[in-house]
Image 1: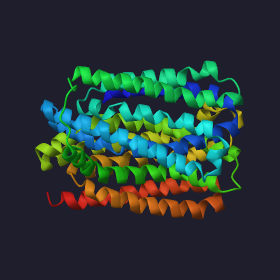
Image 2: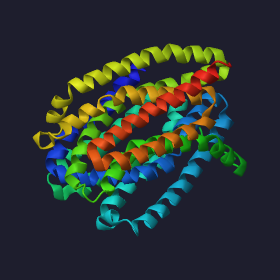
Image 3: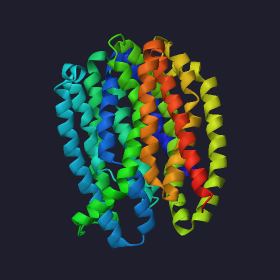
Image 4: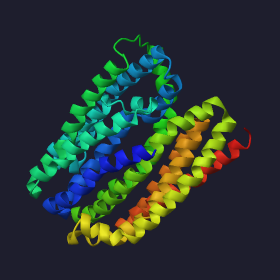
Length: 406
């Protein structure tokens, strides 16, 4: 976990370094416009990834010594994701016919949508299942370097926003295909008899996780989506919200992602070997993870003004109070993921996950519709925070109750 954390810090250090140059070149309103478009495209990325980062990771971790089974899982997942990419593009075209924001800037949305080609073929779940974290992190680093890092040299004014949007898509596609052929060669995955039944089985295992991932990610990104639906909210407000959101997401990626990626395969194996040993291991890890998340939230609150001024500049000073509101999220997000991903999935109770996500998602949408007209962008932030707290209560409660019967 420590080595992966160092690689992840380097991986996300590039976007953090780039932010000051990009926001100063694009300006508040253009940042708001591009961020909102990225927000919309995220829904299609969720559909294409389909929860395989968890279900397929778990399957590979369990069957890593069964070469034929690994090949069957690999190709079942790849063909499913290709089909989902086609479906996502058809849905995108359908929505674009009715949604004014997309019609007004179709080249921007198309440029951003193409990032999903990379997500389709980049087998992050295979790297995680084999615990080949170093290779995965290095490829991610290269994607960020060429997709985001080089933006500093090419984006110099608001008119360059299409270049900024296109570069990550190109980088993800190029390195996604590279990773795809790399794992085929390294793990000898060239030939496999993929049956209709194996694809259906993978989808059956993944569907509950996909639904929960969709719902939980939905109430993470729906706040900005709903905020942009109100006519009174301009691109400048979206820019202030997006600025604070970018910083807190960088903090979450640097801190929470290494924990989840490193711990999930080992917890899955522990639970597979013995429910009791797995639960003991889960409790042991939970103590350290929760304490670390509290410390991260405190530091985020204290350094909010400095982070905004350095990363975003004086034009984004209105993002400081919002970032301080967001500062409790490292604790909430990491703990919620611990309860849901490590707890429910590890124990094999993923069938409860969609109901947790649906319940929290509905509450989040209703809160946004209620709080945004009253508190503006702060209402969107409050909705996200309350939703994360509710997920901890529900998922943590299920894990606690079910663990009593092991």
